[in-house]
Image (cartoon, rainbow, N blue to C red; front, side, top):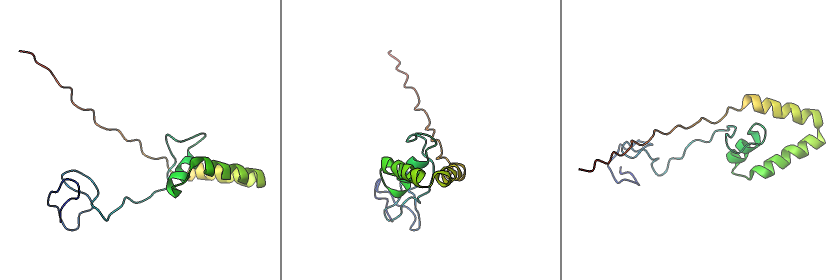
Length: 105
């Protein structure tokens, strides 16, 4: 089998290309419900749910507000439980590119 991106020969059962690190066509990343680190107003619950459902975060926040208005104590308890139970998305730290030393000689 060949990688769709770099064109190198890879194993037939590989999910990732060993050369460029991309997912092979036909495989998709598994979806996980995680609280958002960047799209948050309080705890990132609505932002994470919106990413999981491929929806607009404002719509999910409005659904939480309507739930709050209809069932006041239950919505607060549900939000606190989701805040505790849903893990926060991992923080990605990319390695710094090495500094280019220009040696004029």
